[in-house]
Every structure is written in structure tokens, then in C-alpha cells.
Length: 372
Image (cartoon, rainbow, N blue to C red; front, side, top):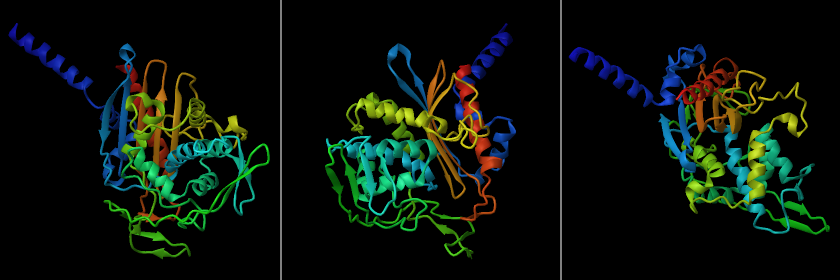
């Protein structure tokens, strides 16, 4: 009888402990090859993961938090995920002038395109357009962007530059011209922004070499101390601000109206086809890594994903609010895939390792949460 008691006790203890295990750890322990190919050499991949499971009992939303190696002091290149705060701050700056809105036409000085904020934000969040990001960068300016990051509680985040353009690090912006319906022209003048101090973080010097702007291999680590930075904790925090503003009361409040918030959410969950792109070339899962990163189809109407992805220099990152019929959670992760340790050579294992890993990570975590 005594023996039976201890058997029952230890079995109960085992399952109790198992139920308390981090879903992240459980997912990383998966035997699925898309996970195990990474975890067997996990130190090579600089993985950071953050998970917030939303508990909605009694209509009082609470977060159950899990972290895996998140560290704001360990640098990784955030790539296009920096576009999410830029879209939010552009909307906030629009609200500072009652004469302009999402659909007011505008043009950047010396640009060939006349556009609207609605179009540019869709291009950023759905297609990850660098050109659209750069237009909003000109509208905001470095001083404004980094002031807003601090204001939202994103103290380690820093934006230094535009993306994929010759004047990427120029601190001077271009003039912006808005055209209102009654032909009134509103100009935002050139901004002379201050030069930021170099980042002071771990892992700023990466790899064994890099390809310079002239195509030469430089056999020393690449210096990222003047590159954009958006740590996983702070990217995750921003997604919370968008979807759960009530949890922060008046702290870090987004200065957006209801229509703008709904537009932002819609844009974060739309497919390229919904804004006019050819489905054959720009498939439905084009902007997704979690769950769908290794397929071109979104095969479930029961899962809704609101997200921003980014990949460059061998770093893949995503932050997403994911809803199923029964559960919802926020998942943010980054992984490095650069076996040859050379930067800027476009030889990264995105297709063979990174996309598959993040897709399976999303599926495993969803499965674990759904099973509880």
C-alpha cells in the first residue's frame, strides 16, 4: 500500500512538473528535424525567444510569460522588424496635424512617387518595402524616432539608418510635401538630426569576415555598432502595446485613434493579394515565418496571425500575435543562420534552416498551448 502511494505520488508529481514546463523548452526539445537541426548546434544560432500566453478567464486578460535566452545586451541585427515602430510613429506624427491623415497625398523631395501613408504602411507591413520605410524615415527623422522609442519604454532600441539606399546613414532628412484636397500644400522641412552614439552591447563584432561595398572580402569581424537595434523584449513589448493597450493604462500609450489601430491590425494580418499583388508570385504566406514559413499556403482559417518579420545578414526575426479558436499568444524570436561566418555575402541558410525552424517552432508552441 505504501509502495502504491509513492508510485501514485511520483507519477502525479511528474505530470505536474511537466505541465509547468516552458512551452518554449518543450518545443525546442522536439525530435522534429526542423527543430533538432538547430538545437544540436544551438550555440551557433544566437536564438532568443519570448512567449506571452494570454489567459482570458473572467474577461481579465493576464499574460503568462516565458523566455529563452532573451538578453537586451546581446546584439542581433533586427532587419525589417524595425519597420513596425516606424509605421506606428508615422501614424502618431500624422495626428499632430489635423490637416493631414492616412489618405492625404504626399511626396518626398526628389522622389518620383506621390503616395499616401495608408499605401506606404501596407507596403511596409505586408511586403516589407525598404523604399516605403525610407519615405517614412524622411517624414519622421532620427531624433523623433528615437525619442518615440524612449517614450514607449523601448530604452535599448535605436534606429540609426535607412535601408538599402546609398544615403542610409545620412542624418539629414529630405523635405516632405503634403497635398490636401483644397490644394493647400503643407511642407515638412529638412531636419538636421543629431548623430547618435555607437551602441554599447555584447556581440557587436560578428563573424570571421565580411564583403565590403566594393565587393572585397575583409577578413575581420563585421562591426554592427552603428546598425539599427530592436531587442526581442522590446519588439515583443510593442506588439503588446498594439493589441493590449489596456494592460498598460496610460504608460507607453500609443497616440492613435480606433480607426488607425484597426488599420494597423488589418495591415499586420493581410496577404499581398489583398493589396493587389499577384498571388502566384507573392503567395499568401509571404509575410509569415511562424507556422507558415516553410510553405506557400495558409491552410487554416482557424488561425489568425498579426505580425512583422525581418531577415538580413543571416538573422531572421519575427514578432506575432497569434489567435486560434481557443487560445491566443504573442511569440517573438530571432535566429542566426550563417554557417560560413562571412557577412554580406548573401550566403545564409534561410531556406534550408531558418524558415523551417521558425515555422516548426510556431507549430510546436501552438500545439503545446492547445493541448493544455
